[in-house]
Structures are given as structure tokens and as C-alpha cells.
Length: 143
Image (cartoon, rainbow, N blue to C red):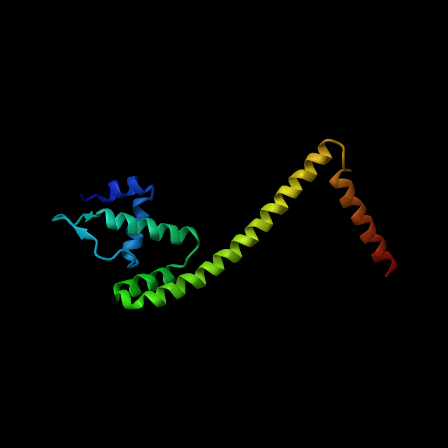
């Protein structure tokens, strides 16, 4: 079964302009067209677009995606190269995931502090900042 770009867009939850962009960038090889020049997508194309969308969601650069596509077009002999690229990229994702987890912990800790301040368990953050400012100003005067 073939899908129009509108149908593909709806099935994927991906804007049609994104699909056009992927094709223009060479990320969607072998897209067929009908006699009017309209793109026609089959399920394999939708699966491929979904993969490209996942890669982009991770922040993968278009140039790296193009490299992966070009290697795939060269056949199975390039699987070791593709695996190496993805393994290296996976390490980068783990690093970023760790940074995000740390940032999320910081946000959750700050929210817990605000809860404690609202419940009167901790002094006001503004008061703490004012004390820090006073200490800073005292150290400047002493220098």
C-alpha cells in the first residue's frame, strides 16, 4: 500500500515539511512518485522516516545521518562502520543522559527546598542571598 505525503505525515505524527526536508537532504532514498510527481511512501519508507525522526530527536546532526544513509546504500559490507558510528554516538547519548539526570536532580532538590521554605522549615532563600551579599560586601571592604 502506498501513502501520500499527507497520509505519511498523519501516520507518523511528523510534519510534511520535515519529510520533504529529509528527502531533499538525501535521507530518504528511493521515494517513488506518481504520474503527477507526488511522493508515494510505502511502509518501509515510513519505518525509515521514523528512524530518521528518532535520530533527529536525539540531536544527531544531518551530516551524520547522511553518512549513515550513504553507508547503508553501499550495502552490508559497511555494517561494521555503521555500528562503530552508532556505538560512538550511543556513548555521547549516555553522557548527555547523565548530564540531564544530574540537572533533573538539581531541579527536584530546588523544588524540595522551596517546599521546605513554604512550610517554614527553612529560612527564606532571599534572606540567605542577602546574607551572602553582606558577606561579600564585607570581604570587599576588608580588601
